[in-house]
Length: 329
Image (tube, rainbow, N blue to C red; front, side, top):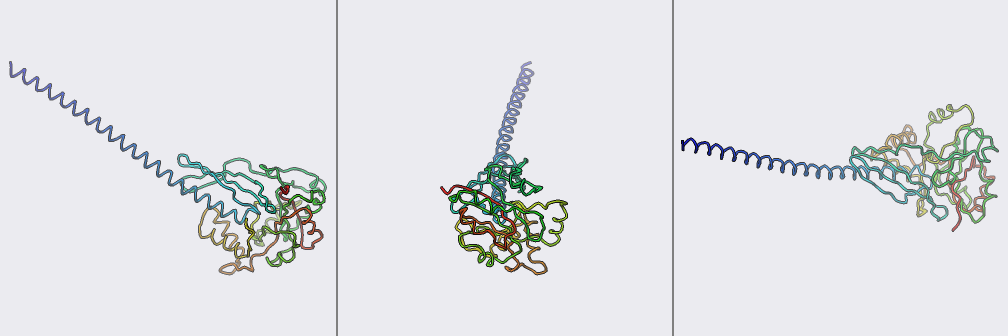
């Protein structure tokens, strides 16, 4: 009887030991799982941030680089990046310079992800379009665009090889602007010119700050002409390409534009196809485009209203449209 009782106790002790060992194993496995999960979360979080940091930087560089050839008299005033899970956002701020005075222009928001893709947030980014007295007087089939964030006029550009039928000439409005006001104006030429020709033919008190480059092929121009039955619609400021003198009003050359295109091609970012289109249109049947292939068909100038009156009756001008008008101080 004692041996049987002893055996029962042994079994009970063994069961207790097994249960304790099982609990320890479960606890150990649970702790290990928690530690592993925590490590995975930390590594995943760090990896997510690293990928988003890279994507955010690439997005910023892509946009800044493209703005060098697409933003007439436009400069970056700063940016802000926000990071989430697998995606982030970039707020990109720009301003213009009118005779040394900065004027806030726009705040654009882009979304990017860890795969390196980015795009603007969904929504309507169109400028405000108003049927103002100029449109009514000329009986045009399109409206004057105004920046939706600042309320300032946005410039329009007329390609010299397209017959628009009717043109806007805002030089006449200078008589109504206070002579102390600073004015930005987009000028469309009657034909293409070299950079040196443009600099020589502009009045000395009119300051060119950005040069519009002809980047269209004959096929593209023909396609544009066939799109409309009535008045042709001029190009908006965000649809033309060119180069400017920058914040420091540095001396520029056609090579600046070619270098921007070549850099865009080497990076192979979001706008690669557009860089490639421009590069091919400029070089035609050559391996690489030359400085002589950079034809200037328009210019953005700044000055006082009084200074810009010197542009009146210049034969090389096909159309003029107002941009920013601001007080001197």
